[in-house]
Figure 1 (cartoon, rainbow, N blue to C red):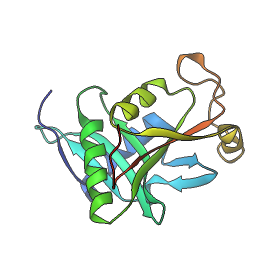
Figure 2 (tube, rainbow, N blue to C red):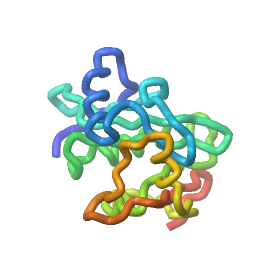
Figure 3 (tube, rainbow, N blue to C red):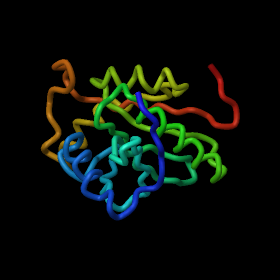
Figure 4 (cartoon, rainbow, N blue to C red):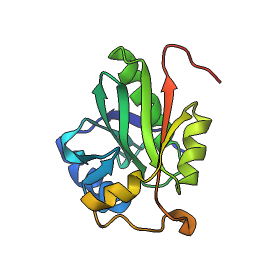
Length: 166
């Protein structure tokens, strides 16, 4: 595992970030909590390795309800890009005075649940049927997710930033 630097995305990162989003989401649009986002229009952090290659990207939005991680993707999971990006997002949230960092994942994404919970995020809600509703907006969302688990629900995870409970 080499050195990972995280910085705001720059125009020359567009192609690498777009490739990540295409691989993860089938393009630049995601539908989460009944909202359609164009990832190209939101602030993006990139993880860059020692060779200067983009190895991950985190797209976020800052609002009254905290900093939401809208998308997190790494070219090769397990090499530290996701952890570095999540730490950088927490720093952005803290600088903005946000009370929490939060995100949504789907009921099939067991590896993401492990990843986020190991980093202090907790499941705070389940939106049953949210993915089924999202298919009405983005019909390309598959019916079967990771490990052939039927894909139906969103799980909301958060970490309160003022007190970090374990």
